Length: 144
Image (cartoon, rainbow, N blue to C red; front, side, top):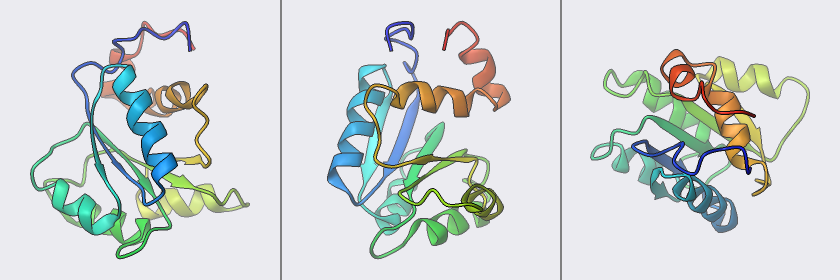
């Protein structure tokens, strides 16, 4: 973490959707620590409501949630012309063979495995986002 500038996420709005308090707080705290403006929701229904007022640069979403799971949430995002281009990273506690392909086929940009590890979380996020052209230039100075 020490090589990553504390302002690396400054000016970036992020939406984090997760029904597990610990995961939500780890993501919120670390992203904010690195300068992001973090908006949170506890399920897909709340997440979609939040997206009516917040236009994030990226979204991190759990898959297993009450009211609306991550599969339905990503489907609704990809169907919406105003939201469909926002990168979404899936959070999953399931790291089984074929999961990567399934999340990618559903429309997620990539996925992270829970539980989130505070010491490596920001590095994982940057490694995922750096594959996206708009983020590649933003993070080109970051040594991972």
